[in-house]
Length: 233
Length: 343
Image: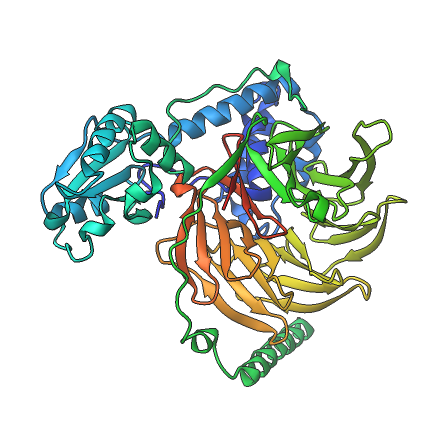
């Protein structure tokens, strides 16, 4: 599971749901140049879990002073803040090791190691193949290609016999693709060829993984121009 | 001081009596009852549609319920807009600009005629989608709460229930814009509410670690469920209306049975350490989709209390979730401004 390691991230405040909105607002006010320093200090003190009166306020999430501050708001500052938020989130979740090619795993131990020891943000895609089984060679070349396009993903391949669990990976379930992250199995795709057409290419594998939400965005797409607004069709 | 001590002792005594009474009626555990049931196989959902148009983090979304709008949903974003989507075509049916960007909740009326939202402005704004000239306008601004609006749900076109950071929930008359009933009792901010399938009751989850079942017409609190070790952020009814599902900052979800008046099971895993902030049950109630504060969604087998999958490949993006009323799909909103439809 992707649990934050204290060394890497300070424990972030709640980011989703109503509390997420409160914390986003506090962050905005602290960063907004129009907020007077005294109020910024107040916000920081309130959001600090170590503060003295934290225990008394246990059940209440917003203070009276904060409610008073909500009335004064500025649209321009908000726009800048939103873009910044997205940028920070993208950076936070793409900061991990990179790879440039498919790694061949030699045995079961190597397999286990790659599942358990990789960085918690790294997606691990393992292709289990056997020479001679239809689709394996094609899938191998597809992954060779994808490995260069998605450097944050660790693509691996291992021969069914080398896994030490060849009974589980008989010819009829190959080629198989297993997807892991932070030690957890996210995707288990046996007999990949049944999901693909006769001839398939890297783009088809890419689309397949994308459908299950397994691939990261290729690059950070800046927020569309806010002036354009939202068009209703 | 002597009297306070007496009262405190009496309260603790009563709590113990309640616990005892609950133990007495407990003739089995959920685990025992489902020992013969097989675990649901691994659940792997695919993205069917991507809804693009918002410009910032999606804070909340809600599906339409009426047969005419079972494929429609409304989303609220940090960009200060409510967008009503046709999830089949991915078209935006309405794009409604809000006065305040800090919106925490949105709701679709069962009839499909209105949507509502609210947040740090302490108000619940009702929008009429079927205005005569085709424009969407604010119909009412329900203002009476002294705290942020964490959740709102329509009962019908003339009544809506809201939960607030002021520790109360209110039943409003939309026509007159006034409060019909104030449900007070929680000792902490109310974070979420859900209406029972028969529309006679509703449940609220709060920062006092409890969930309360309220009778809407009698205006009373029928039952209180405790057990969570931290704030309850998300709450929902089990599809048959006989049980309540809660999600908390203590990283667990719990299932409480209304008739047994106690907790049936806890959905937890030693590897999960962040709070639950949204939840949705599948139509049959077999699966529970729980959204966590690390932007991941775990799928639980509700009977066996085991995780059977993750949504969105652990991509750390999901900020809110909802299952459609016909059970055909689920929708996730993310911090990168997109919504996705999965099944």
